[in-house]
Amino acid sequence: MRLKRFISVADVAAPTELVEEVIQLKKNKFQFNQLGLEKTIALLFFNPSLRTRLSSQLAAKLLSMYDMVLDVNHGWPLEFGLGAIMDKDRSEHVQEAAAVISQYCDLLGIRSFPSLTSQKADYSEPVLNAFETYGSKPIINLESATRHPLQGLTDMVTIAEYQNTTRPKIVLTWAPHPKALPQSVANSFTAWCLAMGHDLTITHPEGYALDPQITQGANIEYDPAKAYEGADFVYAKNWSSFEQYGQIISQDQRWLVESTKWAVTNDANFMHCLPVRRNVVVADAILDSSSSLVIQQANNRTFAAATVMKCILQHMNT
Ligand code: CP
Image 1 (tube, rainbow, N blue to C red):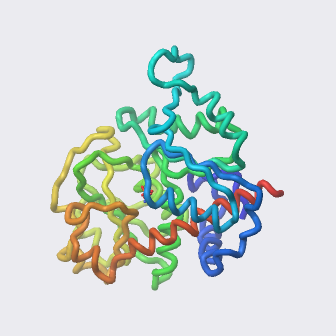
Image 2: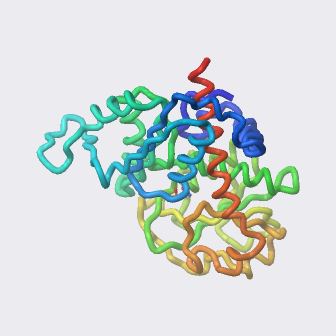
């Protein structure tokens, strides 16, 4: 498959085919090791990362592509305001930075979290859009204000590897967390599940509904006990409120993923994108059990990233 860019699942004409390409690449991870020769990827991190950073660097290596990493906010904070009078701490505007970085690379990966103060601003994806406008290279979204498509692709691969029925019941459950977190993982998991035609139930407390434009087609269940019934996969994730944007409106520990709830599942697999707060989001008994797929998910990040880079390089070669 050829990809022009990878901002969200909407950039993928056939999501099921892309999942299959990841599975095939994983079987022989060096099969495209000539494709990235003499190519460079710049990886810009406006926010910290363990998995995305290391798996993206490793993915570039599988394709023999050179990678450059820049920690933007710690090393070189950028101004984004159009017409800004730049008399404070930011010494470079994204207008020049995006154009300059585009001279140094063939692909551009960007991680940039939301402000969680303005729904309108965050959902307009200002950082990705600025690099698309002022840069000139294909962008891979390494988790933006509202999407984490590499995680979504990875999760679909992991489900494909472990499903033992043709249409498993998949549950996305909100879980408590002490910090206000983005909606990006939950949005992308939902969008990918629906694009793949999966049977998805989302369960969360009142006030935690995700963007209805994204969840259209999913079952919504406010009672977690009902949602868990017969589940084949339970994916836990905290997100801050979309309606009361960016707010923590519940830390109810009854939403912890634990063994009592698990008893009514169909011997479900547990999934989480990591990092995860033990015994706040999920009990040790579930996370440390053979049901947990979190390490397998993290492993698949490398192959998802390599496949996306491969598909963009193949598009550039046509
Ligand atoms: N799941 C995920 O994106 O992890 P990092 O924040 O460590 O990259």
